[in-house]
Image: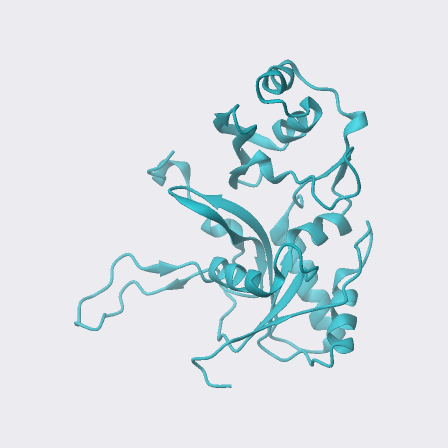
Length: 255
């Protein structure tokens, strides 16, 4: 493959995930059934939802006792107060409240800024069950890449765990990396010269986010393809995960 081309391969046939399922084994089996061969330098983009399911991050709302704030928010927004309580428990700070749309923009315990702490109620097994984000997505990605390497005998593979977030100032959602392993999170162009021989001082590209977004084009929300392989992109591993690119609040101009 030309070094300026990449290929994105959606992996079909991955079953509904249950707590304790071995995602790495299921991915390898599905790739094989698809007559595809895993290669050195492949990057696996894996939907957060199947990682959370395999790690048992389900919450049964019947066991949730809403706080006073959750009840007030429910009265003003029409949202289930038990769901709001799960959102609150998975946040360390509320950034913005929108009663009309029933949304809390929060900072999660991981440090992500997102709607409703990333708590998901779609495709998780009924109205009384919701799904939380993985406790430590970088650690989850590390375990997955290690297992896939061990099962395939390959040494240079990487994993990006992706989730869908909204964006300030633009409509539409995009996929971001919430956990990664085996790949450097950014490409730093600072110190290089541009076409006009000027030294670049600030350009640092978040390649794990760009790859997560690119993979969404074949994964979709209704296609039942929770995994994609990105092939042909040359990357390095600097042992840093997604947490390394979360902006410190002191340097964040928008909070």
